[in-house]
Amino acid sequence: MAYEGKPTRSELIDIKRKIKLSETGHKLLKMKRDGLILEFFEILAKARDIRSILTAEYRVARRNLTIAEGVEGVIAIKAAAFAPKDHPYVHIRPRNVMGVVVPQVESRAVKKKITERGYGIIGSRSAIDDAVSAYEVLVEDIVVAAEIETTIRKLLVDIEKTKRRVNALEFKVIPDLTEAAAFITFRLEEMERENTFRLKMIKQKSQKEALAKARAAEAAD
Amino acid sequence: MKLNPFRRERRAKVAIRHFAYFNARVLAMRAKLLPKETYPKFLQMGIPELARSLGESEYKVAIEQLGPKYRGVDLVEFSLNRNLATTFHGLIEKAQGELQSLLMDYMRYYDLENITTALRGKLSGISDEDVEEAIIPAGSLTDAQLKRLIEASYDDTMEILRKMGYDEAVDLITDLPLPEVEDHLIKMYYANLLEKTSGGSKNMKMFHHFISIDIDFMNLINFLRLKRDGTPPTKVMEYMMPGGAQLPHKKLKELAGLDMEEILTRIEGLAYFREHQGALTGEKDSLTALEASLLKFQLNYAVREARQNPLSILVVLSYILAKRVEVANIRNIVRGKEGDLPTELIRKQLVL
Image 1 (cartoon, rainbow over the protein chains, first blue to last red):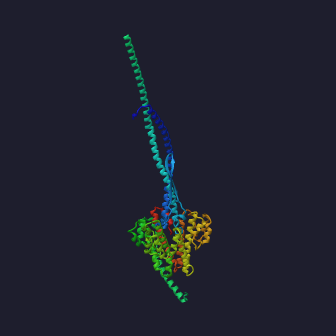
Image 2: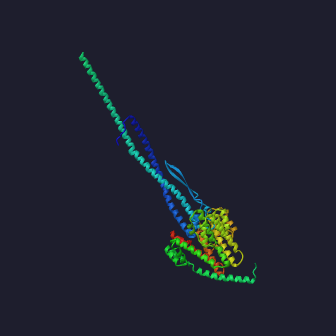
């Protein structure tokens, strides 16, 4: 795109400053992008692990729940499910990864002693304990998975954004500014040359006029 | 009041005559229980086939009644519960005198379960329909009483419970959290049964021993559950009930201080495990197989004793246990099939 501003020296200084800033930004963003990609691959391995862990744990939890429903009956399980008064909760804090704010999720009060689960001990059977324990483990890991997967999603969005910025700087902003600087430099040089030429012409003209005046004075004498 | 010898003898004769008649009816009911060869067949069937097969058995009426409301596994399970409730109510109605009163006391366990379920539902804001579904009306409370209990507000429930004679339960509920109340109620239930059956006739002694074994099994399972969870000994003892046959309070207290390995070795020396060697050490992670083994022992004991004493209360107690086991077995199969459990795992949960 051709430069449309005023080709002045101050403009040139301004553009040169912008080029310098863009080049520094480009370098930093490139470093950020590489850092985010590294972080992403590190978390990706964890995400893959947690997914397979969750699948296995879910299978165990379902199996234990089915056994408990068989042993105690779906009614007793439902009655035990009515029992807990204190529900587990999660605490979310922001964490900064190379300028990307990702959540740090902590689960609390998920795992409980069997005496704290809210159902009576004497009247219940061990199948309920097994099912509850399996689901407690599952819930804890779901929270971990939620943190990892949200981080991955946020990192991906930010990697994409940073990549676009790096490319925009590298292939658009810096070349355009360089082109504009070159144009202004050329225009300034041309103006310089025009000026010199004009001065020479004026000088030549004034010399001619002076000569003509001298000749006219000689002729009058 | 002291009875003269003639009247006492006459009263004993009447009681024996009634036992003979009642036990004959119970034995006829027992003959209608599913034979153990049925379970391997059930394990091979799908749920609809199993439901149809049950629809041709003793569960026909319940399945027909609940058919329009439920489908699949829920239909089977709720039909089993309804049949259980009807059967137990039938037993109470057929019995007379002391036997009826003992059976009513024994069935009060279901009342306690129903009351706590209704209270849990109220405290957790669960709908009345869901709570109603969770009730097994096999105890002494009638359907109308249970319905009233479910529909009432929390405060009204306390009034209703007082009117029903559960004053002690109400006093506990106002002082303690619900899980502790549940445990207290069960303790009270067993203490009451033990007190009512202490001394007296041979039947009473048999009933007393049967309850003591029941207490032993409950204590043993809960003891292992709590120890496995790392509960301190003093806390473990809070959940133990007195009156066990082979595991009195003193012995349990002694065991509570030991580590899990030692406890298992000591417990395996009990008479209950002579025929089930390895039931404890083989199942360290899950106690469900041990529970099945204990239930099997209790059932075998009751059936054996009932055969040796055909005019005793053990005939009806063994039937009640066998009926509960049958319902639990069918439920295990249908729930296991619904959850795609391997057949071998389902088989392990069955008490055959």
